[in-house]
Length: 442
Image (cartoon, rainbow, N blue to C red; front, side, top):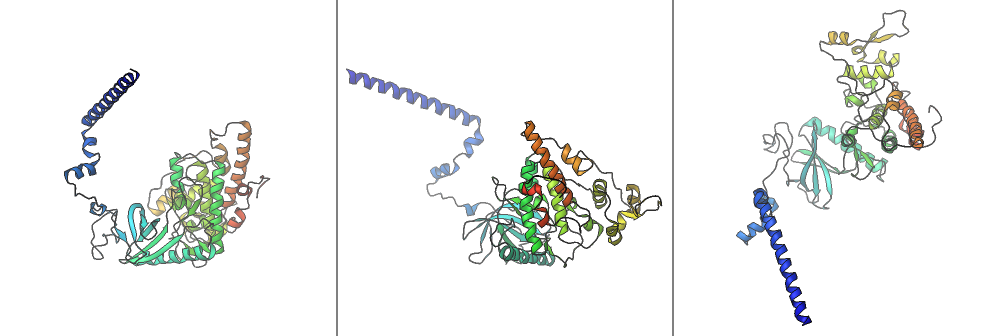
């Protein structure tokens, strides 16, 4: 009798399960019928297999997706577009030698030099970044110099890979294009700021990033190398979950006392000596670092000049006039300054007005737009709102002390006189970097 009762219970439970499964199936069928696109595109391989048991999927049969624009091959036997860029396709292979073959996966960036793509090293299965340089002599030669500098830095000055310098893994020529293979990194610091909705980072995180950049600049200083294009876009996180950074893009780099180019540095981070047309040293990288540190803290560029005149105007407005010797020796100083005809003034030179500059250069300059509160570095740092994470009175007082040290640190990096501007060796001993108590001007 008991056995019969158990069998009946099992039958009831099975019937309930069957009913539940039928209900779920009806629900899913109803959803799929409402969403025909899902119904038609889900499990396609299984559908094809049912139609044709011999069907086999092969990724190599996927349509070729061009990553280069324009994608029409018109130069170099059809391999290059009209701009001398190699036309790159997803799943194509760069390199023909054994051990030097890289499967193209996705784009990472492009510029005047060429293109950078994420690739898989088919020998090691490692993910790398490959820079494919334009098929033009000037870019080819400049990139060869980049290879030379990175090999020197990687092999001689930073063999242990602990000074935050990009690693060059390989370099070769493929179909007349110089290809540079780098380690693959993550977000750049501009993207970090953007993802933070252009809100500044904490003083502690600014310190972490600044100290690492200084470690790189110490090595460059020892190697007599000038980066020439230090900016947030050229400083990358090693991984998205790490605060470790690497300085990249040595394509504009040069050796001290062998400087050739005068039009260098991205405008927002361009030093006054470069704007004035003076000979320059590695001190220009320290100016760029000062601009970067300020931007990391406030979330916006410190000197967002709309032109070279506007850039110099913003610098003068915040920091004052450069020393007279810089104006007297600068080949481009006449664009911005003229001799002071006011005999009652102590200044030998005066900054040209907006109207005068526009008239002399036959171009309409517009007044500077204000993006940040404060007229001086001290005001800008002190007026910046405290993070919501800084809540207690003790935390606020502690952050205020760090801000005082930060102000002095930025001011030392943004000294208008390159002869007095701090070296990376000096700057890394500053209390803002070391964490020691700040006792007064460094």
